[in-house]
Structure formats: C-alpha cells, structure tokens
Image (cartoon, protein in one colour):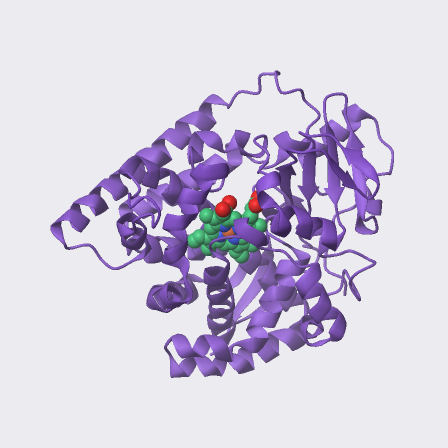
Length: 447
Ligand code: HEM
C-alpha cells in the first residue's frame, strides 16, 4: 500500500490559479515534474524562484557556502510577531552569536540529562491516550508540547502556564497557517500583507506568558535555586567570543521558537509515523517486540531502539515536517548553466528531494528496511535532509531523534493502532506537514 501523497497540479496553470492553489496548500500547488527535475524555475512578474533538487546544489547552498545564502526574509513574515529576533529568523552575526549560546545546550552529553524528562512525558502520553477512535495529531501535539515544557522549564503540560501556552499556540497556527507562503507567493515586496489582528493578539499573549516564565527563571538563577534544565543551561551560557549572555528579552524570542519548532515538528512526525504503522502492521509488530528493551530503563535503551529509529526515519522521509526551506542568493550564481540573479528565492524542498524518482528506490513506498540497503545509505547521505544540513541544521535534531523513537516505542508497547476504513489522511503543508482533517486511528490497549 502506497502511503498518501497529495495530487499534483497540471504542469501549466495561470498565475491566479497558482496563487489560489497556493493559499490552500503548498504541496498540491506544485507540478508532478518536481519529483523528477534537478532544478525548476518559477517566473513571477516580481521575482524569480528556483527549486533545487540536485544533491550537489543543495549541498552548495546549505553546507559549502551558507553565508552566501542567508534565509530569505520573506519566510519569517508570518512568524515575526511571535518569534521576534529568534534564531530561526536571524542571519549573519546576530544568528552566529545566538547559535554559539544555544548549541551547547543540545550537545550529546546534555541529551542524556534531558532523558528522564522525555521518559516522564512518554509515560503520561501513554496514560492519556484514549481507546477507540482517536485523532492522533492532537494527542501527539499534546505529548510533544509536554516533552518541550519538561525539558526546557521542568514543567509538565498540566502546569497552568504550560497549558495556556499550548492552547494559544494552537490558536496562532489557525490564524497563521502557511509558514512559507510569502516566499513563493508572487507578490511584490511593497504590497502590504499585514498580520491579522487576531494573529497579533495571540502572539502578544503567548509572549507575555513566556516573559513570565523567563523572569521567574532569572530570579531562580540569581537565587541559586534553578533546576538544571535547558532553560537554565541556555540562560547561564556565555558567548565564548564576547562573554555576554542572553538578556531576558532575547531569551523570550528563543523560547518561543523552541516551543514552536520543537513541538509542532515532532508532533507531526509522530502522528504520521503512527498512521504508517497502522497501515503496515508487520512493522508495528516489530516495533512492539523491540520495545521490550524499554524494561531496562535509562538512557541506554535509546541505542537499542533500532527498528523504531528506522521507522521514524522513514516517516520523516515521506512526511518531512518542514516540507520546504527558502534561501536567497547574495551573489550572482550559475546553477545548471542558468544565471541566477542576486536576490532570487532558492527553494530547497525536503518533500521533493525525499521522494525524488531518480534518486530513491521505491520513492513513495514505506520501507524502513531501505536504510540498510546501498541505495538507502547513499540517499541518507545525499538526499535526506529532514533537519536541514550544514551550519543552520536544526539545533534539536539529536533531541528529536531520541524523542521520536522513544515515544513511538513506549506507545507501541502499550497499544495497537489500526486505520479507520475510509479515513485516509491527506497531507497538506501548514506550519508543518499535517493531515487535512487530522489522522484518525482505532486504538486498542495491548493488555
Ligand atoms: C522531528 C522533529 C524536527 C524536525 C523535522 C525539525 C526540522 C527543522 C528544520 C528543517 C530546520 C531548518 C529550517 C530552515 O533552515 O529553514 C529546523 C531548524 C530549527 N529547529 Fe528543528 N526540527 C525538529 C525538532 C526540533 C526540536 C525538538 C527543537 C528544539 C528543542 C528544534 C529547534 C530548531 C531551531 C531552534 C531551529 C533554527 C536553527 C537555525 O536556523 O539556526 N527543532 N528544524
């Protein structure tokens, strides 16, 4: 059974039709040839954009010369009211300084320290999961938000502030659904886009809640009573070059992106993984059998969850939570013999690269065993970028690759999932790749 793939649009459509399709969903607004092309050019009356699908071009932009290809400032337009100057949106020296302070919090050794909090969130996720017909995206959002609150601020999601932030984020996503739209939409820069009043109000209330959390934490750090979690680590780390730390105001921007980037993405990935397991019961059984390793407890179990990791990896290939990324070139470039003017939008699409028909064996099929094959290994190196790659790689990549397989195994040890007849989820790209009407599964406890 081939997992759901959005219908592509016809090769040629009018600009108006394209814009309308686009507002609905950026995946189905693309033509099928992008699954075969090495590069595609989109001309609009106002700017050019290029989709890069050739591994060495992707590597050139993300790995070899990232400074020449900053993040397109169009990307952040919808997110700026919420994220301010967060590391997700900045470029140049500001961004470099932020990464110098943030990166140590996510180093390998620290992952071990966050493990007990992840485990506790997993136990709660299993306990919360109802039986019967369940919409699992919402369940996984709840679980992933819990992981973030516990690891960052040592707060379970039941905490009053955590619950409010979680609900406000959901409201934000409803008013501001399309992350990257501004980068592709053929609108000139001078056209006012504005942020809807409700988007701004929601952003303000989320930021006020976060400001309270950061202020309390600052007091605890000063008093020497702060818990040893990610927030404390980030707020007490000095920039090795300048010796200064984040001010509370700067920290608010970073916390906002950790919540957003850290729970929307993992939630999307976990929900799609559950759907893929529901439709591939043979793999579900393998994950459940392997999950017996969890009995040993402790961080050591992570390295034993190999099947779970291959399954999660395969889900990230088919449904990369961040489907597209956009950069801008600062110098003139020649790609595939085409001259690219400075200021063009360069789209790198994990969605298309991960299903490229000339690179992958069985590109649209679900096959976690592929990672042991020659083709799978080559593609993992050259055509697999769910967390991006290079200097701007996701700071949470290592964290997510512990969290995902761990929660998956904990869930599969406790329950069995089955698809609901007639309810095939349709992937659409909102802030992350989601199912248009949610992902519904039948859940039965194993005991
Ligand atoms: C399955 C889970 C996740 C996926 C697929 C994912 C994917 C990504 C991708 C593709 C980017 C690069 C975006 C771009 O360049 O336009 C990114 C950046 C980022 N992610 Fe993640 N992410 C995940 C989980 C997390 C977690 C758990 C955290 C934090 C706790 C996190 C924090 C960040 C941050 C701070 C950035 C910005 C990095 C920068 O621009 O320097 N992510 N993520």
